[in-house]
Image (cartoon, rainbow, N blue to C red; front, side):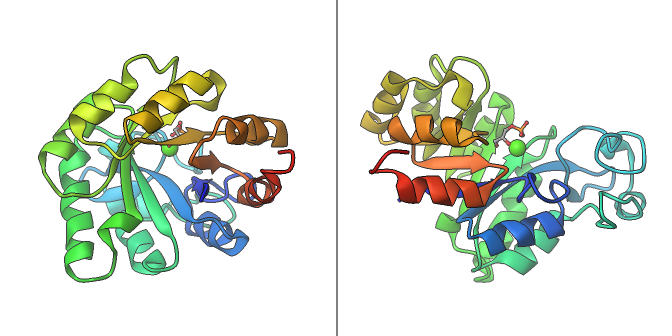
Length: 237
Ligand code: G3P
Ligand code: CA
């Protein structure tokens, strides 16, 4: 089954990385939510893409320089506030799988500890979680913690060697940029037992091209379009 992974929730419809966006993605039928995490100054994991709050909220400043309380006062769009990772875990356990992207520095340890605590209390299944990062350091640190939570190597440019790094770390998947995806890479990854989830195809043409190459997941701002394209796949995506 090809997974539909809601990029920052349903970022094509709602303010990215907000509870509103995650609810919308689930309503649209996505199988997994994708979100980004940074550490606030007090060590709380907050759901935010950028290093600063400037682009996505009515505030300004670095996330790592602000206390959670300060971050919570900001408007992240349509009156939504920045979610804590714990809030997402509390609400969506059992409803949808979750891809946590370690975006900020030093997030691997706190994320591992938090996710394991949710697994231990039975609120999340280990296989329903997927931790990814562009940062080889965060990903290596995460894998060395031995949580058993599936992990994925994120790649931006041409993905030379990413599959070898993924195997070395014991990852379950690679997450390449769809713009650099080639059929040979997908085949090689599959031969190595790695799933291939691509980001961020948002047009029907982009999704169709990825599906024809045999990807395992579409990380997209438009989960409904992705579901439609997947249902067409096999006829003429
Ligand atoms: O995780 C896939 C995708 O989200 C990576 O790029 O910049 O949207 O975090 P970005
Ligand atoms: Ca991301």
